Each structure stands twice: as structure tokens, then as C-alpha cells.
Image (cartoon, helix red, strand yellow):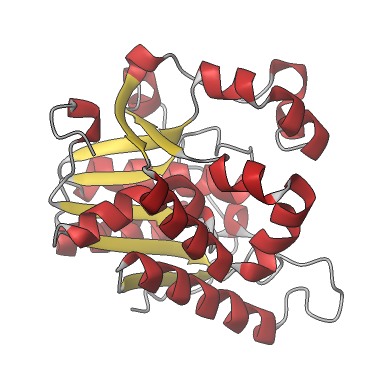
Length: 263
């Protein structure tokens, strides 16, 4: 890390709010490891246990697979030196059925307790467009507006990154959700933070991703190890626009499962 670069500056207390186990590793493993090494506070909030993250009908949505995903999450974060893990226990793929007010209250309770100086999550596009990602962005933005402290930052991608990996992303169908418009990206001048990982940091991030073996190893095999290892070498964040902060819709929901924040 170049301490003279303001885009590399570390917060004192970080809360990351994500939808599924492994979101946090792709988008913020390097940042979390740097903070842990510096003796700073990192809290990870994960909305679901990712129980639908398999094509195997024998395990899809099962309690056993949910337990495996949770174990993978904790092992991945342990590799990074992070132990404060909060699980909301929501159904994978069903975040749009959750009352926004309940989810916002659960996330807001974490923010009120931790009082982070930086909160990181998805932008409204959810990076990939996944509905669970978009819901988590909406909830976290509103929780920060109501209860939060410090700076809200959205994980993002740069125009250069999208151009560099265009062929790969097309082959993988990574951003098909967005059609011909492609995924959202920003210019370098729109970034508030960018963490470019050293080789040693990248090795550690790869180990953290490897801990999510049910999700990451098939993709790594498909992409090739060299490509996969460097795919997310830099972690970028931007601030919400003024429009994003005033247009955070809170629609009424009918289904009302109980939310439990489990450390």
C-alpha cells in the first residue's frame, strides 16, 4: 500500500454488507485484510447463507448446503483476519420478498452498534444485477441514511476494467442481465477508494476465495488460474450520487419473515 495515495487510505472501522457468502471476498478481501493487519475493526454482514448456490438438485436450497456456505464464509474471513460476522438468515434468492423496513432495521442496528467510519456494499446495480444484491444495496443505503455514521461507499468497476475483460465477461455471460448496455462502470476520477493488491496480498485474497470452494473452484477451472487470480486484483469504491441517496425506494412487502442477526 502506498500511504501517500489518498485512494489507499484505510478507515478505522469498516462494515461491509453483502448478499451471499463470497460477495465480500471478491469485492473487498484486500481491503479487509489490510485493515485486520493494521489492527482495525472489520464487521461483515451477510444477508443470506447462499443455500441456492448450486446446480445439484440434491443440495439446492438444503440446510446442509446452507451450513456448508456459512462454514466457507467463516473460513474465508478467518484467512483475512476477520472474526466479526453477522448473518441475517434471509432466504437465498428471496430478498425481494423481505419487508424493507425489517431488513433496514437489522442493518441499522449493526451500524448503530459498530459506528463505522466507512460502510461498503453494492451500488443500486448490484454489480451483476442480481435481485438480492440490489435489495441489499437499497437496504444498506436506507439504513445508513437513518442510522449510519461515516462514509457510504459502493463497490464498483472502472471503464478500463470492463474494457480489459470484455471478451472474458462475454464468454462467461457475467453481465448478461444488463443487455447491450453492459454493466455499470465509472471513470477513475469518480473513485473514492482503490486498493491495488500486491502479489502477497493477491495470494491471500486467492486463499480467501478458495475457501468458498463450492462457488469459486468451478469458475477458476473454467477461466484458468492465472486469469482468475488477477480478475479482481483491484478493489474499487465510489460514493453514491445525490440522486441515489434521495431515490431509495422502500416499497411495501407482504411476506414478513423474522430477521435474526447472528454473530
